[in-house]
Structure formats: C-alpha cells, structure tokens
Image (cartoon, rainbow over all chains, first blue to last red; front, side):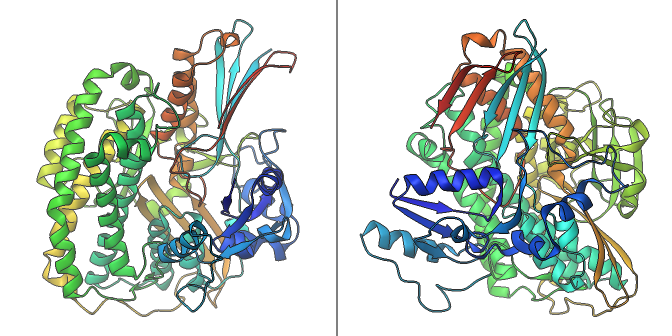
Amino acid sequence: MDVTLIEGAIANQDHLELIHTIRKNSKLVVSFGDCAVTGNVTAMRNPLGEADVVLSRAYQDAQFLNPQIPHDDGIVPPLTAQALPVHAVVPVDLYIPGCPPPAKRIRGVLQALLEGQSPELIGREMLKFG
Amino acid sequence: MTRRVVIDPVTRIEGHAKISIYLDEAGEVNDARFHVVEFRGFEKFCEGRPLGEMAGITARVCGICPVSHLLASAKAGDDIFAVTIPPAAEKLRRLMNLGQIVQSHALSFFHLSSPDLLLGYDSDPSRRNLFGLIAQHPDFARGGIRLRQFGQEVIELLGGRKIHPAWAVPGGVREPLSAANRDYLRSRLPEAFATVQSALAFFKQYAETHAEEVDHFGNFPTLFAGLVSKEGGLWEHYDGYLRIVDSEGRILVDQFDPRRYAEIIGEAVEPWSYLKSPYYKPLGYPDGAYRVGPLARLNICSGMGTPLADAELAEFRRRGNAQGIVTSSFMYHYARLIEILAALERIQMLLEDADILSPRVRASGGINKLHGVGVSEAPRGTLFHDYEVDERGMIRRVNLIIATGQNNIAMNRTVKQIAQHWIHGATNGIPEGLLNRVEAGIRAFDPCLSCSTHAIGQMPMVVTLIDSQGRVIAEARRD
C-alpha cells in the first residue's frame, strides 16, 4: 500500500493489532483528523484513570438492566488503558489535523502525494485543530 | 452445542461492527448477534465539564449526524436555562435539522445502499460501491451526490461549516440566516425535489419485483417509537410528544413529554456488545423491543403535514398490513425517501417564512434548573440528551440514548431472520450474495456506530466457520 489514512485514536486491542498490520504494509501512514493526531475527544477519558472507570459508569450503573461490562472474548475488544494518538504506537509520516479536516486540506495533501511531492501544510486554513 | 459464523467487519455502514451467526448441529441458524465493538465513554468524561461545552463535545459522538447531537444538547441547555427560545431560533434550528435529514438520508440511500439495489447483491463486491454506481448509473449517482450536497449546504450556510458547526447554543442559535443565503438555498430546491421523486419511483418499482427481500429483511412485529407534533400528532423531527405504537396500530403511549423518557424506557446491557439495548419498560426486556427512525416515524404519525409527502404516506401505508403499519425493515429505505421529500417541502416553507431572516435568535439565561433533557429526532431516530448540573453549570451526570441503540434488538432479529432464510448447512461454504444480504439487512437501519465512515465498501471481510468443538472448519476472506 502506498498511502494509508488512519482515522481515530488507538483505543482498544483491535485497533492496536490493526495499526501494526497497517504500518507493516504501508509506505506512508497518515494520521487523519484530530483523534488520530492528538487523541482528541476519544482521549478525554485518559485523565480519569484506566478504562474501567468509564466502562463502569456506562454499563454497571444501577439504572441499567443486567449491569455488567461487556467482555465476550474474541468479540468485544478490551479497551487499552489510555486512548493514544497513532504516533504513540507506530511511526507516522504525515499529519492532517481537523475535526474533521476540511476538504481543501485533504485534497492538498493527496494532490501533492500523487504528484510525488512532500505535502506542506502552512497557515491557519491548512494547519488547525478543531 | 453451536457453531459460529463471524462476518467482520461489515462494510458500508458508519463505523465498525462484527456479526456472529450461531448454527446448530444440523447447520441451521440458531441465533444471530450484531456486535458493536467501539466505546468511548461520553457519560463519564463529560462529568465536570461546563454545560456550554456539551454541544461541542457531544457533536463528536458522530461525524454523520453531529447536528442532531448539537440540537439535542442545545435543547437540554434550554431546559436548564428554563427559557423559551425566540421563534426565529426555533425555525432556524428546524431548518438545520431538515438539512441534516436530507444529507444523511441521501448518503444512506444513494451512496451506501443503492449499489446493492441497482447493481445487485450477487454482483462483484469490488464494483458494488459508489464508484461502480457512478460507472453504470451516472445520472442517478450524480443526482444523489448533489442532493446530499444540498443538505450539507443548508448546514454550512447556517452554521459556517458542514460538519460539527458550533452554532446551536442553550437559548437559541449564534447567527441568523442572510437573505443571500436564503435565496441561494431556494434556487437549489427544484433539482432536489426532482432527484428524490425519481428515486421514489425507482424504489417503488424495485419493491414490486423484490418481494423476497421485502419479506425477509427484518420483517417482524415490534413497537415503533418517536416524536409527533403536539398538535395533531403529525410527523415531527425537532420537538413534540413521544408516541409509541404497536404493529397492529394500537397507540400505547401518546402525548407523553419525552423529557420523562426514563419512566418508560429502560436500557439493558449484554456481554457481547458495547451497544446497550433500550426497551419499553411495561413490556420488559426483550419483549419491549421497539424500532425508531424513518420507518417508525412514518408508522406512528397521523399525517406528514405537507401535501407531497402525505400522498406518498398514503401509498406507503397501502403496502403495510391491514392497519397500515409497515413492519419490514427493508422499507426503511422507502421511508427515508419519503422523509427527504417531507424535509424538502418543510425547507421550502421555512425559506418562505418572513420570520426566517429575523436577527432575534438567542435568549440569554443562566442555571435556573439543575436537570435538563433535550430530545429531538436524528435521521436514525429519537435522540435523548439528559444532563444534571451543579449551581455553577458544571455537569454532574450525563445519560445519552442514541438512535441506533434503540434499534439494537431489531437489528439482531433482522440478522437472524435473514440468516435463517438463506443459510442452510453452512459447511458447504457461504456464497457472496448471501453474506451481503446479511450486511444489507443491517444497513437498512443505517446504523451509525462511531465517527468513522466506510463509504467506499472496500474494507476486508473475514468469515469464519467454527464447529461445536470450537475448531475453525472454514474461512472465507474478501479484500
């Protein structure tokens, strides 16, 4: 694979496995969007501690029927202790920030890559979170 | 003992899911489960955040229908402020929600589902996607893409951007609509009407010749739930009362303030999915299964409230049972098209409303109640945002009930029904067309599982057959 765009943070065991497979098979790995670049909203759970803190509020509260944390092996992937940006797990070659990245920014990067150039994101319109 | 077939991941739905089909000793389908494997934890990490941040944070629940979260969150804020928002603010919020319904339904029908309908379930999977559609049916594809673009333009011209506009706020909206933007949107309407009407004509003909799909894609009785207008019980998308109707057309709940949802809706947890299963409490779990979204909204309403959509509703009901209730989940597609038509009619009415350009769009307020609930109709169904705050407006507790979750039980039953009809003795291998029918049954609900989009349909799929001893006896892979 010449280029792979990665959306989202690395938040569970399936993501971890997938990102290593992608890195092994891609010449260029691009963190695509704020969750991939920084962890963004997905990483808002990190300061609270490990994953059980958020899981327990979402599934074990007395307001629910059959309160339990979903756990079926091989089906529901366990969460990683922290939600991580892609570059914290594998080397990343390019970053496209934005939530979501505007079309012009995506096109700018892909166009440069197609022309064999190294894309440069400069200025507020091309390089901005949120 | 059972054997399990895993389809992973399902392509062309929003997000990432796995499906397991459990076979008995004879190779017949025993049960089926639709697994949602993504989890982020909004209910916990929003605690301690200021109320004003909630619209911006919860919009990130979904990149396809962020406007729905924005509106439900702003409405929960209105409730906590204890204010009535200015009339123009409500009209503008409605306009944006209608734009959202148009763009999301157009994406679901034209980009994601019509490759199955026009190219066929048994066609080459590498071509059965939007690009294959553009090659074979360019006018149809172009019309659908431009219809979605129109819905996105409504959102962008109001909120400043297509996705995640920070525009609706507790008390109203931040910016009024300009006359130039109103005129531009009006100029785009005729083409949008023409596109959806030709799609409706196509779908009605398709349904005539594909009775097998109509009969077996999640065709079973459940309850149907959603909002209807306070006056007359008409089709509603932004405000109104909760109504619940059964498959015989009996109204079980009516004129119910949706802010009291917790009295009648419970949420069950299963060990095999991160998606909870809401149910109607008086009937218990899982008998209290209900469906939400386009099919439900058409089944519960007393009328659409606009002439073109009302004519289509009458035809829709003729395809239902004796009481006019349509129980096949395949007909979600049909309902979606009728809702696009209704949304366009209402957009036209709002753009002709003299009040729509009013600059008076925001009421100021403070923390006047410590608990607020905002409920609106997302494209996929009823959406509940329930916040408790402290005296300073910091969030103490959050509960969100998302549309797709409320279809969880029905989606599982749909997979089971399709699998039972088309899978017999799976040890001989499973043909491609059959796998895709299982996926398409799920896709009829247009589930929205996380903020990622797999619109192209080229994600790999792995199907594993496991025998009663847990051994893998066959594996099919498509890339």
